[in-house]
Image 1: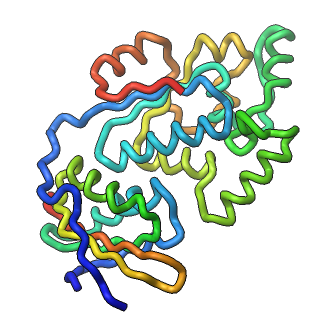
Image 2: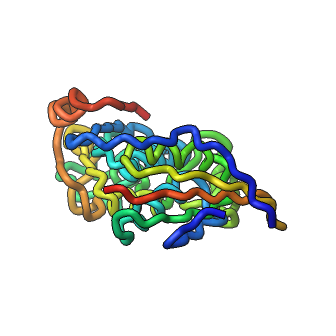
Image 3: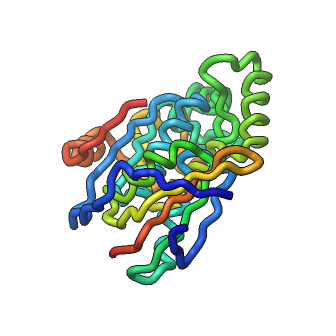
Amino acid sequence: MIATQIEPTATLAQLQETKPERVTIVLLSGDLDRAMAAFIIATGAAAMGMRVTVFFTFWGLNAIRRRGATSSAKDWLRRMFGLLNKGGADTLPLSRFHFGGLGTKMMQKVMKQNRMPGVPELMQTALDLDVRFIACTTTMGLMGITKDTLIDGIDQFAGVTTYLAEAKKGSVNLFI
Amino acid sequence: MMHADVKLDTLGYFCPMPIILTSKKIKELALGQVLEVVSDDEGIKKDMPAWCETTGHQMMGMEEEQAKSGRIYKAFVKKTK
């Protein structure tokens, strides 16, 4: 094998600031592709030494719900909603080409064949890299999602001001 | 051929796994040691220098090889902190 030298784009590495740069991501979508993008950015940023916060709201909450978990909301309407709206990181549908589950199944198969991590694996990696998860309490209440039906490792149950306090100091703030 | 103290095989992994595995592996090295990251994801050519620039580790260089399965990239990173 002949090895050829290629010029790296950045040769001189600069010392990282003592205060880490901050990244915030709002995950509103419960789609597989969008959740994947969010977690790829989150894990990538965390690996670069940035402090990352993911704020889960509306359908995005489905990513951090336990699979098959029901709702223990007080009123039947919200309990029903929590029941009909299926959660679980491995059950997220594609935003396009879902085809009643067939398209998503195919995508998951291709991903597995190519050793690409799925949403559950990426999410676990994010937690391992100390990415902070915040669950939006307002939408949790609205959608009949209760704390006991979410995965372990949620850093905070909070609202918009907690997010904004973090985003204000962030150099990268994304809404997915 | 560049010298490396530790080798990390990330063949078959796509972005962001090679970088994540690198960020984990570099913690096991002593200061001044060089980590060789082997990948077949072309993105590493740009991603590894960018990661080094952000984290402060030193990008020593990169090598490209033609293997049976396709092109292989070897990034050499020196632990500086």
